[in-house]
Amino acid sequence: MAGLKRTMCSRCVKKVCSPRIKSGETPNLENAPDFCPMKLLPEVLEDVKQEYQKTDIKEFARQASIQEFECYEHVDGGLRTKNPRILELIQFAGKNNYKRLGLAFCGGLAYEAGLLTDILENKGFEVV
Image 1 (cartoon, one colour):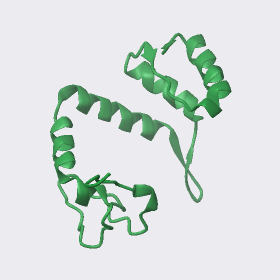
Image 2 (image 1 turned 90 degrees about the horizontal axis):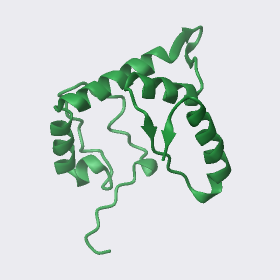
Image 3 (image 1 turned 60 degrees about the vertical axis):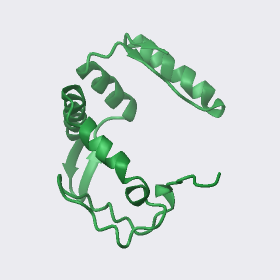
């Protein structure tokens, strides 16, 4: 595995990427850990920026932000979710006119995946 670039965001305690930065800003990577993907793979970030310029990707991101906005409500003490995640998924897929949804899961969640497949099929989706 010599030369392998391994990112590990789940192990990061510095969080130089948070709070979120504004569009066009670049985070200060001086304090980022050596395994930070922004340090290790800057070319990937550039590729992502180009990908986000595509019309279909912009529309997907726009729909995702609308979905997120609609699924939270302001209450005393902050924000809370209004809907279970499965309903969010169904709504988002509907907004994007998706008819077929892919489902990936580990063997330990096969039973739950079967339940989810039933729910999605009952809502008119083809599950693959």
